[in-house]
Length: 214
Image (cartoon, rainbow, N blue to C red; front, side, top):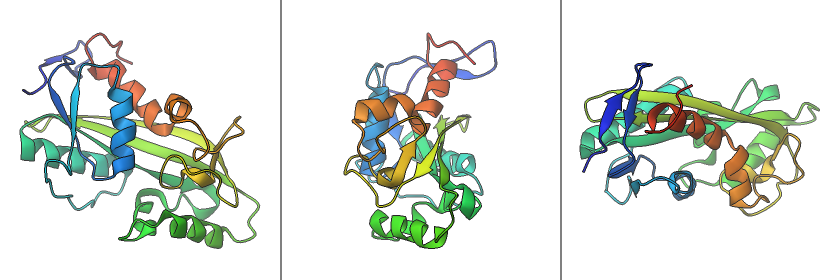
């Protein structure tokens, strides 16, 4: 049963926290993290892979554009509201790379060990280790309506990577004012400060019933 929706005084579409929400990702790490963020709400989540959905081609030029492509495709295919994430690592000294190509740097096999090694190789002796994780979350309805929110977390890159938790580039990313990388951090701690949590907080405030739009 699709989530009931309404329109707030700000013009944003809200939905009642009941029913099923498609998480438009085939990445098990992202699915687990988004499901954990949704756990406090009365929402039944199902992943795109479980539904046998194809992955659309990500032709956008920004995280927001790619998140919308994925969310719209899943919503149209299932007739249910769909939530999609597009996120990545932006390294200051590399001009923001890998950015929207973060997953592609890991290749078709999803080898993020190789991707992190490539980041290190391209940095070379550059002393500037500043980086940020960026996430865009799009909630799309089958009628084509979308709400998109962006979040970020700033930090520095460490070498060698540390920790086996998280996924992707997490082991090489040390958030500002922390002593543990995302790869070392307990998931509950990461969920409090991550780029995805930042975007998710904005989405909940604007679109979930009972949230205070901002």
